[in-house]
Image (cartoon, rainbow, N blue to C red; front, side, top):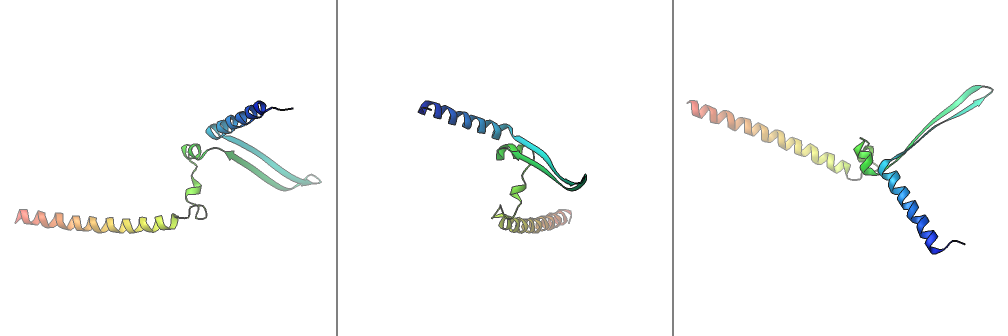
Length: 108
């Protein structure tokens, strides 16, 4: 009969295992093929990767940031980005105009 000590060791082992998997990552890959009379009818390729968000970003996986269903504020950020780009263009034009006019004054 398991004691509380055994149960806590088991849960600590599970926590350690989960921590290691999330830190290092785990990849499961496989193919499922459905054939009838040696004629392949269907092939399903399965690729599963389990890791922490930090690890995923470290290896270049960040698709969830750009999925509109997962990133609720994305549309607002895109709109703000467009507005800031337009403001930057206007400021650059003003700066160019001021720079040109101050150059003309010095020459004249």
